[in-house]
Amino acid sequence: YSRGRHWDMDINALGQDRKRIPISITSKYLGELNGMLREEMGKVMHHAALGGAIAKKELKTDLTQLAKLGNFVFMEIFDKNEAWHTMQKLFAYAENITIEVNSEDFFIPWELLYSESLDNPLAYENFWGIKYIISRVINQNERPGDIEPTTIYVDSRPTLGLFALKDKSLPSISRKEIPFFNKMKDDGKITLRKLPGLDPTPTNKESELRKFKKFLSTPFDVAHFACHAMYDKKRSVKSFIQLSKCIRISLYDLAQQPRVAINDFPLVILNACKMGQINPMDVHFFAGDFIKYGALGVIATESAVPDNLAADFTQHLYAHLLKEKYLGESVFLTRRELLKRNNP
Image (cartoon, rainbow, N blue to C red; front, side, top):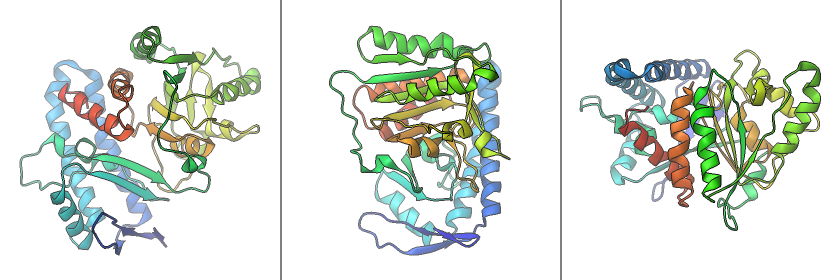
């Protein structure tokens, strides 16, 4: 909860009394902590993208530094006070823990926190995103999916809308991700609908934007974006996704009349660079906006993700989802499986 330039926190767990606890962090410092975590994660991703001997050599060093930073941020947020002691009790109480973070303007890459003691041998499995199921509830005025059941029911097979970018700069989308969805369609596991090619010519932007919005309004169970994205720190509404034939569609474009309307409350998967990245001082970002337009839930990347790693994530995630596993569990299992393959 916002309290001037600071925040208060409630930790609400089964069998525990809820108490309001102050967090001694300013909004400016929160932005710095976000930047530090993303910068360190960027090093991990950079070496992973290079692959080969470099990735194997640097991975342990990268993740060790990330664990130390994740522990530092955990201590900065929870401090060695009532919040810290409460969290330690809860972690000791049960192994299978789901953490739901409910906030309006306090954002941090929670998956990168590391609450174990650094006196113990560092273990990658102790990162929150590898150890716990984490979900975020973004408090905002427009959340139409809040009144819907949290289970997506399908008659026989889920209908998937694919929004993909075919470009030499992201070869794994054409080589791995699109063929993966085509095979699932051929195997009868999904009904697949693909976004038609859009003309990126600036003079045709308005008509192409209407085509995009019309396709996005098609009833889907899952809308999957495999593309490039860019977050604009200075002008967040200019942040964009780059889709078929390299057309760019910004948050500003989505809000123009007729405004985007996502029907039937699908799950939206934004598998692109920096789509989930949130400026702690901002309210315009893709994950929150897609929820505002009608998504039931959103999965988005926290940092820049190389396309080959994103494609691997897709294949593991859908293997679990199509077995009717819960979304949080599916993401959790996918992370653990990829880490076993040295894919961060």
